[in-house]
Image (cartoon, rainbow, N blue to C red; front, side):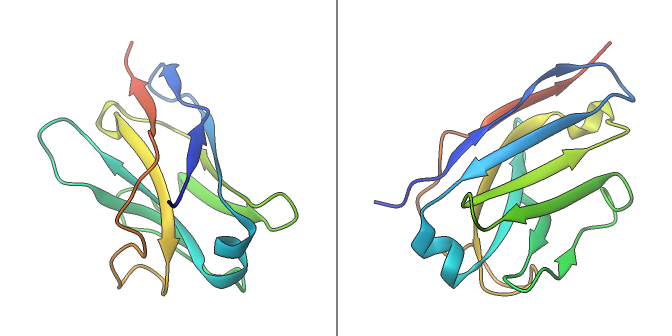
Length: 121
């Protein structure tokens, strides 16, 4: 069973920052790009950042310039640095593998537990 372990979420005020982490198996890191997704209450899960094996990155306009994805292949970990957070960023954040730069569905049907991000004053 695929395992992704997300961490780093919390409660932050608007304008604040958080850094999320996601650990996965070495075989996944060696084979795929990685992506962060989020799901807000009552909404569909959406892609927020993707990084290829080679380090190319892509973001939707909603987070571009505020979020930065990075990966540490030695630690099998992908990160999401989130700055200038807004209340609309409130969601559960998940990671999964990606074959492209966001144009493909997530590789695996199974998801981790996610990490809650709440942006509120």
